[in-house]
Image (cartoon, rainbow, N blue to C red; front, top):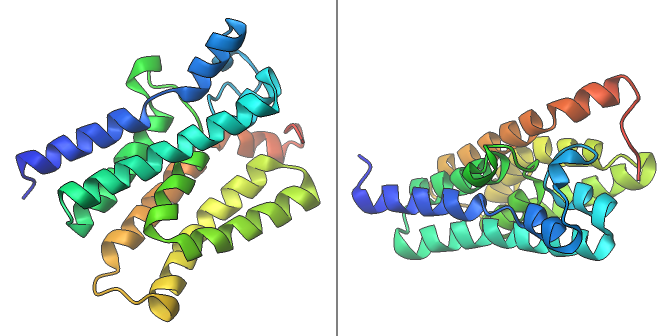
Length: 202
C-alpha cells in the first residue's frame, strides 16, 4: 500500500529530477536552447559541446546532486527501502522526461551517478572504472555510459553479496535494473549512431 507521504516523496523526487540544469545554464550563458544542439539532450556532454567544459562540469555536478537529494530525502523521510528505490527511479524519470521541457530532457547518466553514489558507492566506482576505460579507448562517451549503466545491476548484486550484505536486495536491485533500462532507452538515438558509425567522439 502506498501511503500519502510516500506519494509526496515520489512527486518531490520526480520534480527534483526534472530541474533542467543543463538547459538553464546554456540559456543563461548563451541565450540558446541546448535541445537544438548536438544530441538534443540537456546533459553534461551536450552542454560542454555547446557552452564549454566549465558549463558541462557544472551541469554534471548539479545533475548528480539531484539524484543524491532525491534518495537522501526519501531515506530521511520514509526509510522504507522500496520507497527509496521508487524515489531513485522517479528522479531519473524526471531528468529524462522533465515536465518543464515537454518531457524532453537528458540521458540520465549524471543523475544516476548521484543516485548510486548514495545507494551503492562501490558498485558505482566499479562502473566508473569501466566507463573511463571505454571512453579512453574508444572516445565514445555514449558507449561508456550505456555499458556502465548495464553493468550497474551486476555490480550492485556483487557489492550486496560480497562486500555489504543487505537483508533485502530486491529494492536496490530493482532500482538498478530500472535505472539501467531508462538510461539505455534514453540513449536509443546514440545506439543507432554507434551502429552506423556516425556517433560523435570526444
